[in-house]
Structures are given as structure tokens and as C-alpha cells.
Image (cartoon, rainbow, N blue to C red; front, side, top):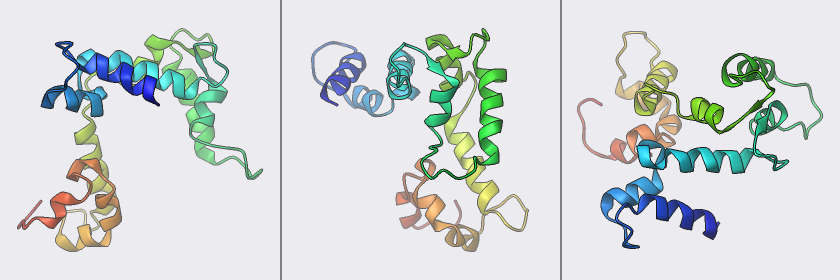
Length: 165
């Protein structure tokens, strides 16, 4: 892990002084949020998923990152959906594998707000009466989703006194 962290730190250290300002440290921790760090995100994704080391992510590697055939049971329905996404949306040049540009398109889509998407997900999963507002009860009924969510600082914001979220 040390070489990977060192590479990420050097990319985040904009002034090259081998120390980290608050913004540089935030770029180190959350590289997907900083333009100058996005190449690191793509490279790390490629390294994590490219099991055969050919510099690309093929469909089997893409699926294996999400689903393991270890239990010898049937494939869930969503696997077929993900295979179709790979072919139809992510493999832009239709060569059966994702290169760095296609990986960037997949993991760092343009005009995609991660916080907004997470907030929508939390509301969609928790809001039961369909009034588009979360009640205290709806949040408490789904407390585990909120505690695990970066959108509310992994539950820390729930400990503060709020009339509404």
C-alpha cells in the first residue's frame, strides 16, 4: 500500500513541499473530488480491477469486481444488466475491454454530483409516505443506511440537534 499512497500523496502535494495543506490532504483522501487527482483515481481503479495485468478491464474483470461465483449458485439477475451496461455504455469503442479513457467515463462521469446522488438514494430508500420529506421516524427506521452514508458524515450529523435535516 505504501507505494500507492506515496504516488497519491505526490499527486495531491501541489506545491511539492512534501507537506499537506488542508486542501492537499482532502485531495489525498478524496481524489475523485479534485480535477488534478482524477488520473490517480483512474489508475487505481485499473490496478484494482485488472487482474490479468494487461492494462485493460475486460467484462469478466468488471463483473468479478462486483460478484463472485464462489458459492456456485445462480447468477443474480443484475449481473446480466451489468454485462449489458459494460457492452452498451462503458465499452465505447466496442473492443471488449475498457481502456483508461473508458474507465474515466465509467467512474468519473461528467456532470454527476455524488453528494446529490447519495442524498437522493437516502430519501428514496427511507421516505415511506411519499411526501418528499424525511421525518425523524423515517430516518430512525433506516438509521443504518444513514450511519453508513458519506452524505451525512457517516452518522455524525445525526448526533447534532436539528429540527430538520
